[in-house]
Image: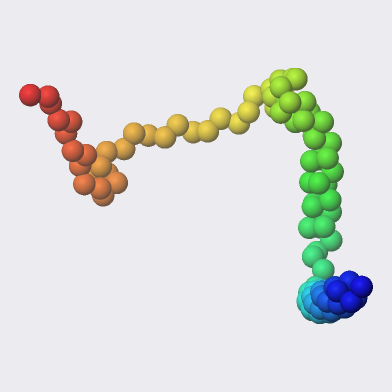
Length: 112
């Protein structure tokens, strides 16, 4: 009976320590969140044109999610196929080391 009572006292002390540690941790987190909130309040809002563009971007992303999901699950074609021609990139000219200010490439070794 005595040992059970001692075990309960030890368990209560342990729970009290854990509770105090959790209370301290939560208090620290709350203070950190309040600091972040204060910093965010001090920032000026983005320009209306930027906000509108961001809103349009996220709306287009949300609209395209089903097509991409379909493609990524292997159930359909790539979402950009069939939308016409994609803009072509200009071809890069083959430059020599002399024109780029680089040392010449080493010659390939021949087997003996």
